[in-house]
Length: 140
Image (cartoon, rainbow, N blue to C red; front, top):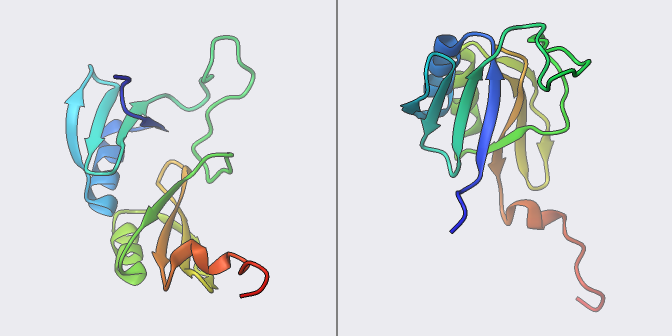
């Protein structure tokens, strides 16, 4: 059987990352591999926090350098929550960066970032959740 999916998140300060993901998401530390890696448990997949220095490249010989300011990447994490306001309060207390809170037909969304600029969203789904956006089949 293949190993389950894992999500790896680069952070510039491992202990600060551990505290944020513990306090904002309720995750708990699992295994550690040396001083630069900690597994966070409690989500549907393991979240691996990887300590990487600012300015270093993600791949050998790569031109893009790690930048821990607020940034956009093509991948971010969506965290379903039962109470968006409570989740945002926990994240604010854990030093997050909050961008917006637009309401949608399917629910509410808060767009945030961790202290290292990595984006994530809290989702408070309503009704049928994302299925609220589906177009009914013809004749219904």
